[in-house]
Length: 256
Ligand SMILES: [Ca+2]
Ligand SMILES: [Ca+2]
Ligand SMILES: [Ca+2]
Image (cartoon, rainbow, N blue to C red; front, side):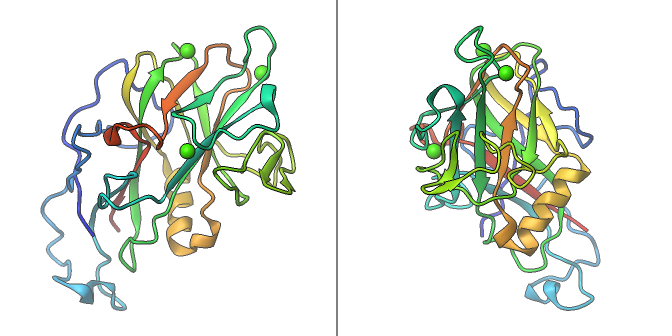
């Protein structure tokens, strides 16, 4: 497991996060990330004994980004978008993840993003303290916020469409909108006023969701990004873009 770090500060105007949390860090261009809290707690165990009963849990910041982190071999991120206008079409291999509340223009039809990251390589006993999600914006959505929700149903990257989660398995509600498809509580929002890198910092509810993924990987169905009342679409680079550091990135800072 590589411990990675984020050093650069997010540029003003690129990030607006409604959820509470610490200041967000922008992804480094080389995709590496650092432990923001370089000095471990004085009572931290020095080795694998840290996971023993009563001992301090592991610390550090772990990133997940296809082809980049934790290693160049990681391919655990799946992403796609669902399009009401093309209800039976998969976009699992698309180079951008598109979300909108009005596509095509003036139809009011919606696009929803789905994204998840396998985090099963985290060390045993990991306790999530802070969660950051980094994207590269290919087309901004000035002043229109899009909301993140936890998905509750398994979906297949190259099969999911507006109508179905996987071949032969319809969503409870089209676009993954049913109560069995996604949780009701917003975990944060993204409001991109410029193209380029953005970082979303999740609040306590989002940290709890990610902790659930760590504790029981069978519950990790990732997140959906929606904004059905918006009129300015947001396009994010997908895991399928050639430029690794532009791919969706999840950073989990461990703590206690
Ligand atoms: Ca994809
Ligand atoms: Ca709409
Ligand atoms: Ca736009």
